[in-house]
Image (cartoon, rainbow, N blue to C red; front, top):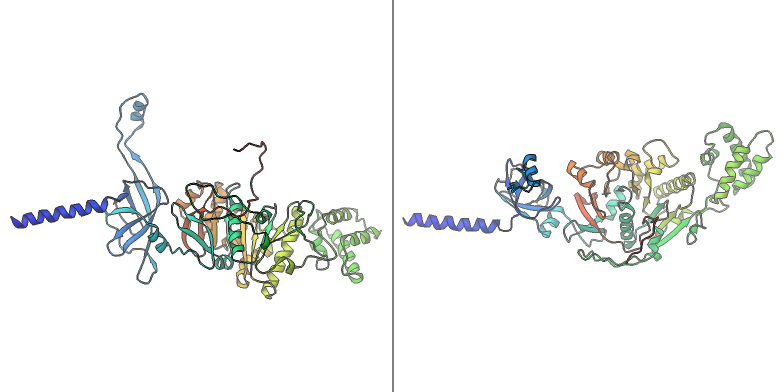
Length: 508
């Protein structure tokens, strides 16, 4: 009898321990259980992408991420009709959730996934910040870390390693209005903070606002620990059109290193053989007499040639001359690239074909000078990248962009591809970007381009990308060992990419 009583007491204690252990649980594992994923019946508050933990018999605490949640009910269409009519219907419902196993750290601190399944009936708990940081491998306040925001739902800083970003290239992908320029501005602020050398190809003049201090963050729910400031002392700006961009330095080029075919490509005549021969003859004649000749000199020689009808070519060259980008003295690359500074190539107001010329010549010079070690290692960020390395067709910049994407990392020339049309970017260039920041994308063609170019993107994450709220990004690659949903931190500087309102509104 005594033994039976002792057994009863022991059973009661175990039941009490189990009840205590389950008190903070958000669910129980059920069904067929694997080591890479499992399902649990939800009993507490859980959302998609939340991190959970489960005690494994062999591995201790293991981290997982909720990838899907359903609400299963016994409510049929017929019973729903009765409910609409005011009937008293009892609905039986259960909420199962699917978890992808992230893993655990072994004795050598290596991330591992259990080799045996979890136990059915094991309680599932919300993961604490310390476990998440340790298992994901997030480090903060590092010497080379670019702080981009907080892990969604947690007060955990997410930092991208700057060296990894430059060495392995970067892409920022989003639909129009989803915040790609905003998050790119955050990255540039971090690069400037670490005194990295940066050049921004800025077709719409969005980044010159970084010279000015931004607004204080008024989010009552999140403290990103960001203080507004400006970076006027770190930024140099260059532009071809100083009437639109009066605060910029002039960006000029000479003709002496340019051949007739390259100059003709800037016109609507393009590859006309007769025009090319006339232009080549005129340029060779001028080069012998004066290496610093300009377009006006070419026009004068062509007009003096009575044998050929060069009227159409002269009209095109007059248009180029009016653009004002050619001068006797060109802007030196060493003026643009200054160690520890950020240079903005502001192309606002510059015709597309002239933009191609500028980006082609600057990019080619960066690559050749970095190979020779004549300029410091740098990050070249290209906005509207689909215009400079398109998937369909060839433009003047296609070849150099592919070269930098494939070989630039060997010479310390990083490439940042920023676009709202991933499907229109050369897939070979996009696939070379090892660090990806993906904001909301809904176009099926763009989604397909992303999934085919980005490793480690699951079907569930593809669904999440389509519903990402403004200000949240999926971050992958580089020093980030697994895809993370990140709430992007506020800008320190003024954001210059806001949409213009057709009908102004008064804000209180």
